[in-house]
Length: 117
Length: 112
Image (spheres, rainbow over the protein chains, first blue to last red):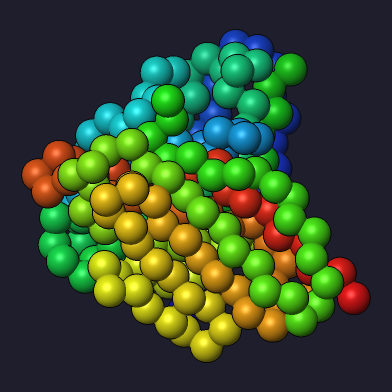
C-alpha cells in the first residue's frame, strides 16, 4: 500500500514553461486535493475534487488547472509557470468530502519541490 | 487577520520539558479542529483531533476553547523525536465548503 504518490519529487522550470504534476492514491478515496506550501503561509488549497468527475477551485487557483483522470489520479497543470509559483506542492486524499462526519483525515503525498526561474 | 494563526516559534526546549502551543481561529462557526505534525521536508500527518471536552493521547493533550476561539496542544515529557512543526487545522462551518484551513505552523525543537 503506497498511499499517496507524487511525481516528480523535484523540478526546475523556466518562466513560461508548462508542466504537469502527477498524483495517485491507492486507498480507494473519493476526494483528492492539491495544496501549495510557502514559508510562513501554511498550506493553501489550490483545487480539490470531491469525487471522480468533479473539480472545484480552492483558495489560490489562478495559474493552475486540474484533471481528475479517474478515481486514483488527480493531476495539476501549470500552463505558463511564473516565479510566484515556486513552492512545495502537496497532493492529498481523503475518504469522503468534509461534509461527511468522520472523514476529515487527509493523507498527503511526499510533495514536489518546484522552482521557477 | 489570518483565519488561523499560530506563533511560528521556534520553541527550543530540553528533553523532558512540557511545552504548549496555542492556535487562534477567526471564524466562530468553525466546526472541527485538528493538529497535524510535519517533519522537516516531509508531508503533514494527522496527530490528533481536538474535541470540545478536550482529549489526550499519551503525552499529548489537545483542548478547545470556543468562547475565546483558540485550541491548544500540550506535550509532556518532550522527546527528541517530537522535534517537528505542528500545524493547527480548522474546518469551515457546516455547508460552507470542503476546505481545511491550515495555520502556518509552530516549530518545536527538543534539545538533549
